[in-house]
Image (tube, rainbow, N blue to C red; front, top):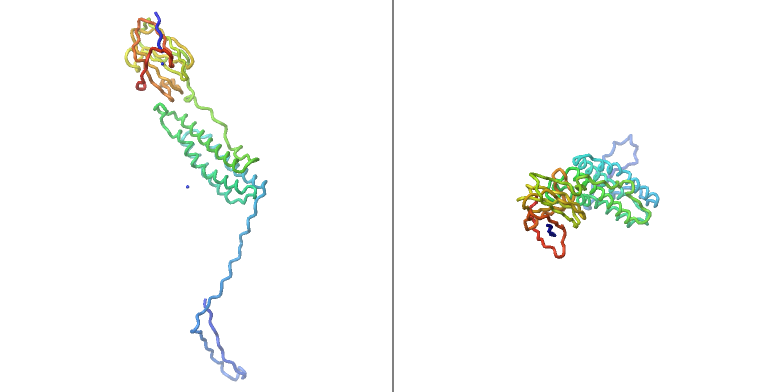
Length: 323
């Protein structure tokens, strides 16, 4: 029998006596030094210092583009060092060096005298450089999390991937803002922007449809057909009492069907859905959901369950603690 269910300085005056007699016949007269006391002395004006700094001339459009290209060249190696970091510790060190390099280039660009046509755009480009540290902070937030969306420890490879992807996003934002500010014909950032990274297996893992995840105890005669019409993969768990002690569990991909055989006695049906399946821990690491059917299944019958809302469905479900 088959049943069907569904679910930021002063001066001085010298006065001397004089005579027509020869110097040799008369003693030398004495001299008297007087300083006027009825008027204050006036300091001599100090001439202004002569300027030794030449007036900076504006760059030509070609010279300005060359300066921007040199700035990018000075950043390429730093970007490569960040993207090639093998560990999070190496990444953090390389990232700090890159941020220092970005700041130096900002200071150098700030000393340039751009051509008249690029004056306003130049200010916008400098603003883009100023925003880089904040952009990095924002884009690295996810890599700083040590737990997955499902509360499990996040793998080092996943955090490193997220960190590198965050830096890449900040570099892309910097480049786009500079080019937008300076207008057509600018291609700042083209050489220093790294290619997109491939996610590590921990972020893309999926089980095989119909794969038995766990099985324990003797076999029975019961059968359960599962139709997963939902948008997420699921693991269906058949348990006599609690889901952490299953008789058997099976992986069912979205838009797929699978069948469990050898079920013994009456049982409960639990199911968990999500993404980024970790086959070692037998857990989804992101977007987790845990549920169960409210009614116990009678092992005397074969059953069919549909894991998506169904009009006219006759089975209710409830959320349960993670398992």
